[in-house]
Length: 320
Image (cartoon, rainbow, N blue to C red):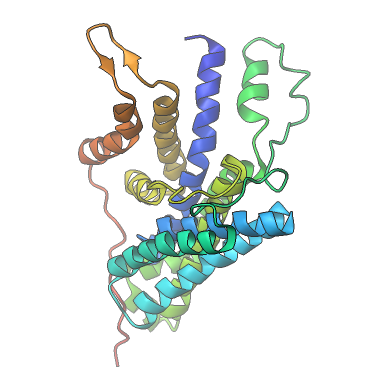
C-alpha cells in the first residue's frame, strides 16, 4: 500500500468521522449534565433534511445550516421537556425522537418534493472544500507535501469547525465555571441545587448545546458529505457516536480518537469490498457491516471500566 492510498483512506476517515465527532461531542455535553441522549440520531436526521430542503429553496447553504440547527434544537427541547421538566424516562424519550424524525423527514420530503422521501440534488448550495494556503505549492515536497495537500487541506469548513470544537469543548468543561457546574450536575445534582444553582437550567443548557452540535452534524451530512437528503441517511451514526462516547469515557480528546477510529473502519469498508482471499471472497455485505460489528467487539472487549456520570439517566426531583 503506497502513501497516496493511505492518504486517501485517511482523508475518507476524516470526512466520515466528522459527523460522528460532532454527535459524540453533543452526547458528551448532554451526558455530562446527567441527561442520556439516545436521540442524537433523530436530531441529526432532522437537521440533515431541513438543512438540505432550505438550502435547495433558498440557494444558500448557510441558510440551510441555520435551519438545520434550529430543527435539531427543537428536537432537543422536546427531549428536555419530556425528560427534565416532566421527569420522563430519558431512554424512551430519545428513542421516540428517533422514530419521530425517521417518519417525519420522509413524510415532509415526499410532500414537498415528491421524490420518494429525498430532496433534489444540491448543485451549488452545499459546502465545498477549502484549499489551505500553500497546499498546491507544497504538493511535490516528499511525504509532508502530500500529507498537507491531500489530508489536511481541501475539507469543508464544518470539518475544521468540528476539530476546533474538541479543544473548545475541553476548555469549556474543564476550565470554566459553567463546565464545572455542568459536570457537577451530572455527578451530584443535589449538591448543585443546595448551592443555589438551577439544575434544570444547566441541563437544558447542555441539551441545547447538544442540539446545536447535532444540527451541525446533520447539516454536514446533507450539504457537505453528500449533496442532498436521502431517507435514513444518518444510517445509525447516532448510535455509533454513543458507542464512541463510551469508548472515549466521556472525555473530549478521547472522543476525537474514538470517532476517527470508527471513521477509519467505515472508510476501509467503503474502499475494500468483495475482497478476494483466494479460498473465498469476503462479500460486500460483510464489509458494510464491519464498522458495526467492530463497534460491538471494541465495546465488549477493549473499553474496560467505562464509568458514566453518576447521575446520568436519573431525573432530578428537588427536595422540599
